[in-house]
Amino acid sequence: MTRTGFYPGSFDPIHNGHLDIIGRAVKLVDKLVIGVAVDTGKSALFTLEERMEIARQETAHLQNRAEIVVHGYAGLTINAARSLGAQILVRGLRAFSDFEHEFQLTAMNQQLDREIETVFLMADPRHQAVASRLVKDIVSMGGDISPFVSEAVKRRLVAKLAPT
Ligand code: ADP
Image 1 (cartoon, helix red, strand yellow):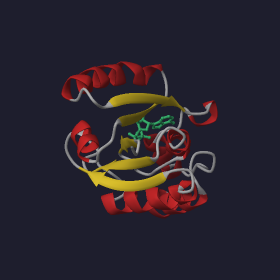
Image 2 (cartoon, rainbow, N blue to C red):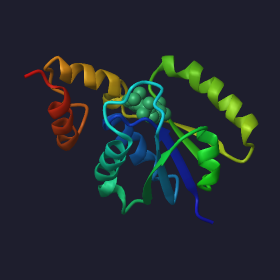
Image 3 (tube, rainbow, N blue to C red):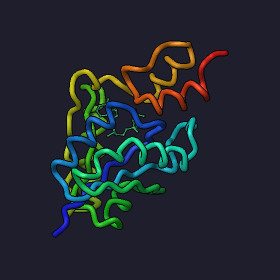
Image 4 (cartoon, helix red, strand yellow):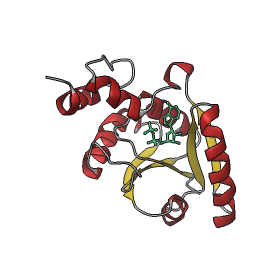
């Protein structure tokens, strides 16, 4: 049986915290579907196509560890996970502040689908605090985002947001 994981998020854009979680998730599954949410709940900087393209480029080097597929999805995460045949929902836990929301979400997802298990992974402490929103704030104020994203993602962010 192919063990499939689904890792959902807005990935606007993908950063070192996400990549750390993906690097850990591929140790647990044969196939990892990175679910890029159509609806981010906030206005996205990058289009869905851009967010998917960046995610593909940034994970290309991990393809030898597991099959990695980038998939856009709309609607309920648990429904997307089920329709893709995933047995595992992968979530990254950043800090204590994530816990309460994730706890509630997982408890409700358990009621919505009894077959899919949520697995929480913790990033390396160096990457734990990284959040797309903060990376965007830093670049828009002329700060250096090299510790948080790849060179390619940095170039894209600078092109869109850096002050001239
Ligand atoms: P962001 O908050 O950076 O926009 P997303 O909303 O796309 O990220 O998050 C997708 C998933 O990745 C969530 O499970 C989230 O908890 C996790 N995640 C995001 N940033 C980190 C990080 N720095 N360390 C660990 N997990 C993270």
